[in-house]
Amino acid sequence: MEALVNRSRRQKSLSQRVTGINVASSGRGEGIQISEHFRVRTGRVDRDGKPTLRHASRLHHIGIGDRWSHTPVLMLIRDRNIRIIIEETGELIGHLTLDTTRDYQPQRHRGNKDETQA
Image 1: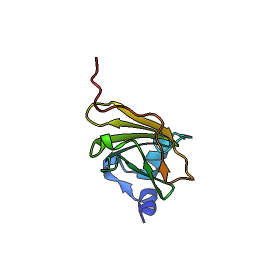
Image 2: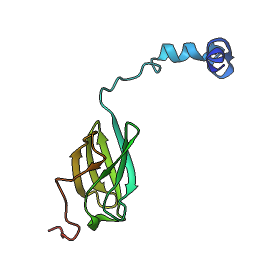
Image 3: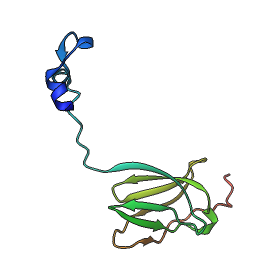
């Protein structure tokens, strides 16, 4: 129905031009093709120190350590590369490449919550 309206009904606010034609002529209908998947996920680390991430309809648990339990985090995701940062400070507390064959992702790089910055 929307396609029919956009191709046939004249729009008063557009000087009686058809909406679909306006979009096509303006170049706005052409999208930029991005080859990689980017997203930001906000969340909280569970009590065992594992934030969760859904990838390809499967839930993955990322072990970053129980010292980070209940900490609000941001996960910056580019394809299978993931960076985990503290939401309030922006401190990087983990990064990994997601192994899609495993539900639990052990963490190789860990930060220290008790460290003070000099």
